Amino acid sequence: MPTTISREDLLDKSFPLFIKHGYSGISMSQLAEGLGVSTETLERYFPNKKALFEQLLEGFVKRDMVMVAQDLKDAKTMLEHIEGAFYFLSRHQENYFKQALIFADFKRQLLNEGDDLSDSLKQVYANFDRSLSQFFGVEDPQLIDLILCMSDGLIWQQIYGLGHGDYEGNAKLLTKMITAYLNSLQMVIRLIS
Image (cartoon, rainbow, N blue to C red):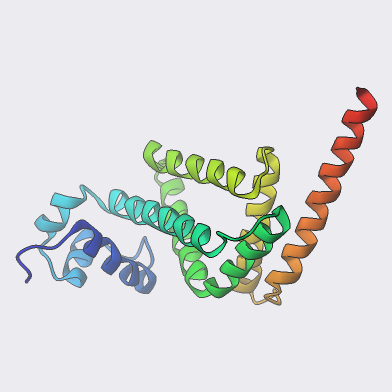
């Protein structure tokens, strides 16, 4: 067993274990065994499986925001940002499939236990929404929800075996819908003024 291991190493190495067993199908002691550390060592870093998993999710969100921002640093318009983000999603879809399935298992277990996401993870998601708002240049939180629902829906359609994986086409359609909505909103504002 290694004498020192970092929190990040434990998180990185835990993801394949969650993929293999699901969230509800693995215990802290099984995680420790799969990570090659003692349960006591693992619990020094993470008091329980929920804390470990939520920190893993936080890491995913932060990493993805950095990667998307880097990929789209030259995008200027909302259209370029949305199409670029959906292209990013298409390139990493297998990883997002796995994350979606594991998160669904995690959320199911929380609901069964009468538990909820930690305040810390809720804050990470709120920051993610704010970052998306700035990133896409969209201030309306409902539009951000629509973009997220569309991207999540594409992932779930493919998980169900129903989707065609046309991220680019869906990004263009979504952008047209948002543009039409924003244009109609501006017309209403001009009429009222």
